[in-house]
Image (cartoon, rainbow, N blue to C red; front, top):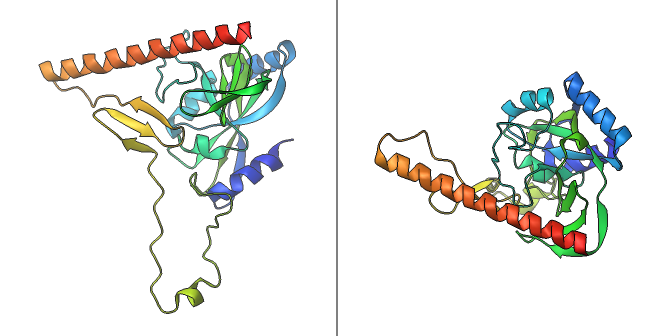
Length: 259
């Protein structure tokens, strides 16, 4: 049903043919989602989810899980809008591409019950909250899911190369009149895509696609007092950040319920 829209949104950001194949999702994960479409209110909408290539097998076997909710998973890329499952709307594939280690990502189905807001609310990171419910938030181009039953991988989409920083109007081919315009000058070297993670301090990095800062995990531990102290500092910073985000999410939910 949504294949044409998905293909159109991907085309400006990939090189080579776009290929779809059904995600090999475990039967119990499939059944959980089918049950949710019958039992829960909401519209079925497609989204993207990007991750490291080695994570896809586990995602398909266990489903998309919220870190720390009756599982051993930890938050890896931050949780600035709350601890949930982060996906991207169909019109913004570059957001999910920024988290991929390979030129493939998941197309997911989401049972979306978020209600549009009469006035957009500014959120941390410069993004705006455009719709929300108790289980879904639309923040910028992200669709954040707080109920694991409401999301499931449907397809894996791949191409020869992902180009998340290419604008929709940019072409991957050299224009026909390029040689004539440049005369006999040698061709210019192509510009490299900007990095996804930009170091900005000790054990800290800026994630360009989302505009968020994150503390980077330490390298395999140094033996000795210095390594242990560094690990404690890192763990304390992570704990403090999680506490701040939890308080912010709680305050947002209270404000939403009052409004």
